[in-house]
Amino acid sequence: MSWREYWNQDTPIYVNARHKAVHYELIARQLVDALPQGRPAVLDFGCGEALSADLVAKQCQVLHLCDGAELVRTRLKQKFGLLGNVVVMAPEQLGEIPDASLDLIVVNSVLQYLSRADLDSLLATWRRLLKPDGQLLIADVIPPDVGPLTDVMALLKLAAANGFFIASFVGLARTFFSDYRKTRAALGLAHYSETDILAILSAAGFDARRRQPNLGHNPARMAFVAVPRS
Ligand SMILES: C[S@@+](CC[C@H](N)C(=O)[O-])C[C@H]1O[C@@H](n2cnc3c(N)ncnc32)[C@H](O)[C@@H]1O
Image 1 (cartoon, protein in one colour):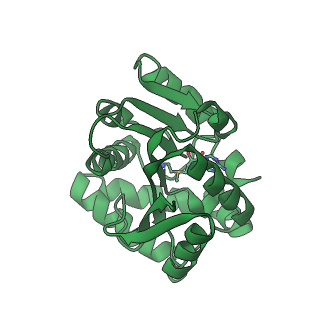
Image 2 (cartoon, rainbow, N blue to C red; image 1 turned 90 degrees about the vertical axis):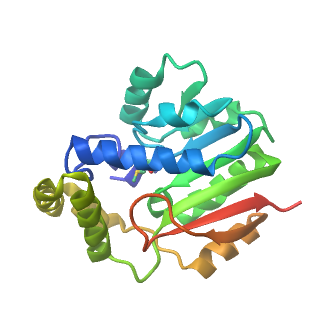
């Protein structure tokens, strides 16, 4: 199984519905804060179920929600299909977005599931789709020294603050015995240092810097803002 195939099913990543809702609302609110001025054209790549994407869409001219999993896309279409400025698409459809038309591309918690070859190819695509003054926001990148224990501590803190602390223990036990752990052990997750990412982005034609804070609830992971080099 590839990571892309893995995500085409219900996964034990979220301990319950409350966790999933809290997660996606946090991401949506952070994205709203990160939007460029005006009514930007935005691509959220590897968006997942993006349960609060309507909050982001309200501020956008167009919001492209792109995910590799068909199941995820079906749910996105069911939830947001009636919003006139939300376009749900597969990665293979990125060519339908005009070149140099996007103000912001967000890639949150996705790099760990991409091969290096796929990342390089996507960076070329994202660069082509961005306006000359557009921004690429890559977040939740896992540094080499950050392992599952750090993820567990960050989850428990989020759970304690949002009323699903007890449920999180049940959820963590379920994850431990699930195929996520087996898939993680078999396929691995890509880890990058800050230096790695800045070098990869530079080689792909971007000027990049570390962004503080990260998106989401895990401050041990890293975010970067990159702009196409002219
Ligand atoms: C951990 S979830 C992150 C979802 C969302 N960005 C968030 O912040 O919660 C990873 C998402 O990346 C998607 N994904 C994984 N590999 C992909 C690929 N090669 N192309 C597009 N999407 C991919 C998965 O389907 C999944 O929805």
